[in-house]
Length: 178
Image (tube, rainbow, N blue to C red; front, side, top):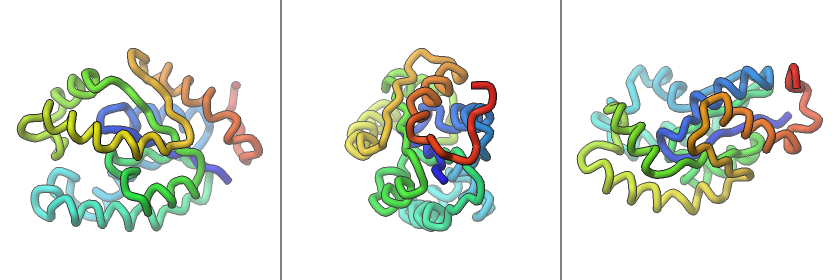
């Protein structure tokens, strides 16, 4: 059984597109950041502030290592998850990995509207530009890259659906209404 894993930089729409895609495919949906928050009883921002990024990344690795959905699932990951080699191997083992891509300007606009992102604190433009460039090589290792610039959530989910269809041939659940 192949799952669909969504990766990409923060604020590219992994959770929103993931929910919509899961509904379209008839799959379950899991957001790994939400799983980590539920397991720890803390927000990601609280973990970064109180425990540090290294502890958060360790919890993230454990969460990814333990992921074993019983039914076909769309899995939305955190922006830094796919950078870790162990996470990358595990996620690729789970199914098709799709990296959502949009412009840095769009990301900066979205992040400016949400102050809960710990890696965007301080000089966000400089920090996010550096982080974006650092993570790009890892994102390029996804099975499929999907450009979502200027698309609505529905349009982005449709584009992902079209691009992953060949990877999902033979899955028990077929997309209703397609």
